[in-house]
Image (tube, rainbow, N blue to C red; front, side):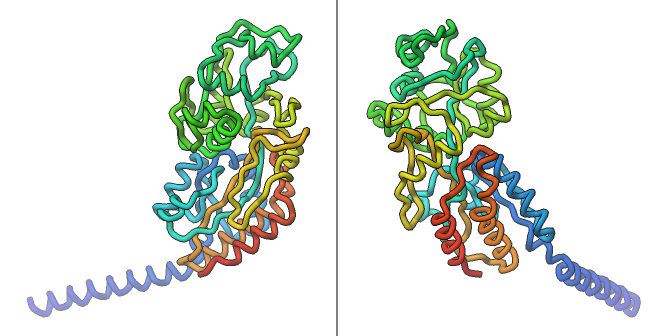
Length: 347
């Protein structure tokens, strides 16, 4: 009996040894796992991020990238919890947020317009909106598309009798930050009553989750108005409004009008800047950047270098894709500064 049990124990030990050996060998033969990158955050950046990933993977077959378009707030939280390799936010993290995070590198990766879209099929030319009118709509004071403020902006145009159906983001959103940053800049009333943030207590309207949700709400609700990145309006064949800028000119959102706004911005060493309500006759007033966030200290050298390599590509070669996807490319000087910041990552 003793020898039988001894034999059983020996057999069990051998099985365990084989299993451990197989496991070790398996981990050694699957280094590609170190090149599986997960990112999450901004929906604003998602249309171009999708193209960036496809193009980068085609030229770097050993790297696999999965980006989850869950909103800037969600991306920040997942990065904070260590669930992703990089985040994307349309609001740069402030000092307090950075204190609550592991050490991060924060760089701009793209810029684009937050456009005002609407469901007014009766209009045959773009709706025009001044800052005061847009604030009035989102404060819930302007309830009809025939309100005097709207008709003044659209002189000579017959406006429909629809009620204004306000839509906004229901999730934490960098797009919301850019939009409310603009409203706070042009209106003391908005700044003191609502303010700017990735999430705010909206005075009126119905919420939609992510930019897709807001686009869907606008398409479904007659008389609706909402704010989304230009690529979403283009994809959903939604019209966009001409907005009155700081120079008093009505301007459509475009990569060119965002570039005009960005050219006026002072971009500090920490890359935290705003370019809403920028001066200049051709500047689009609701323009903003999107930032990439990654850990300053990378635990896994192979994966860390893959993340840095991808983001370097995004802020240089990837910028060539920007105009045709309705984004504004980063200026060359900013691209090079972003690359230098990425080179401070340690492994």
